[in-house]
Image 1 (cartoon, rainbow, N blue to C red):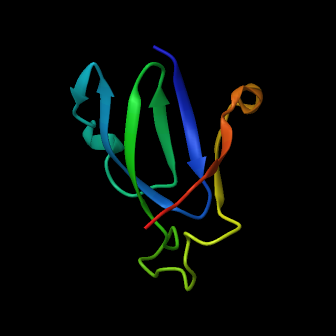
Image 2: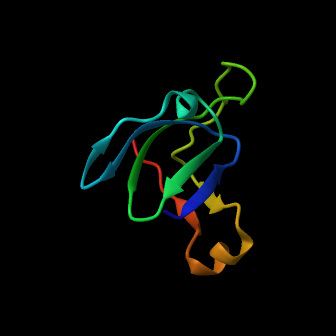
Length: 92
């Protein structure tokens, strides 16, 4: 199974669940807040986002749903040409 690492800059994320036909439990070593997560081929990955500093619990002093927004990207350079660098649209 292919694997891609996705980076959300300056954002903490937590994997909620993997789904490939049915929901799959997230392994213990992948749980917790981080700024890079794995996306497996053919799998929907649901994540929670928290706009806070990576090394503390302090929140940013701005509204992340306002422009200019954020991008997510893959750590494999060839993937950037295959739509693995995209804007992240945030809504309330």
